[in-house]
Amino acid sequence: MRIRVINPNTTAAMTAVIEESAKAVAAPGTIVEGITPAMGPVSIESHYDEALSVPGLLAEIAQGEAEGVDGYVIACFGDPGLDAARELARGPVLGIAEAAMQFASHLGRGFSVVTTLSRTAGRAADLAERYGMQRFCLGIHGCEIPVLELEDPKARRVIADACRDAVHSDNSDAIVLGCAGMADLCEYLTAEVGVPVVDGVAAATLQVQSLITMGLRKSGRGEFARPLPKQYTGLLSDFSITEEVRS
Image (spheres, rainbow, N blue to C red):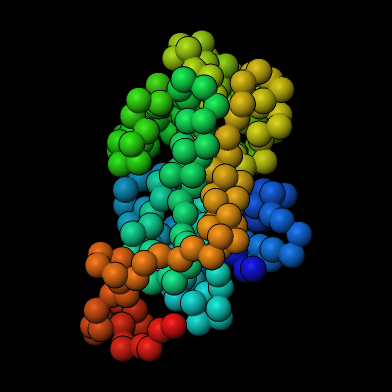
């Protein structure tokens, strides 16, 4: 079984953190590969960043399909390009916000999301609605730490304080980490805050692995059938879709 965990930004150090989190929960024999796209933003902190991360992400999905990869994780809490990735892939594709919220909903009456910048809270709220998680999502809180500053040792304490405040203000039973760059903080934050802390990278990896183990793939009909053959022009010419016989 091969699972590719794609970091939609181009910061390789973050990909390494993400890959480690995914490998920590993978079953023996499951090959997990952390992937950094060749193009895109160095971090994703706006709708603009998210939109421009999608071509690089889709290029990696297309490459994985050519190489026989079984499933994918999109390791950004905005779940960028998720629908398009599902059109291209034969196997399951999970976003980390989708997976983390689903996992957290099983751990109590409700959860709080703690993310990097408050400006991304609206996107997280949109996803909670999309995934049917509104009743469980009790609050969304930004730490005001830019993504690329998460490696700063001082960031751990700021994030822990934000988690603690979220549990108190929302009366929540769990914390969902709202950035893939926080994937290595679960054990530390759980000890500091005293409630379960869910990392979406690990959660999505386990969900993809389970679906593959059960022999489940997307249906391949309707909305998530392969995109229609079409030419793209200019910078997007490499993304043209051709007819392809698929198993």
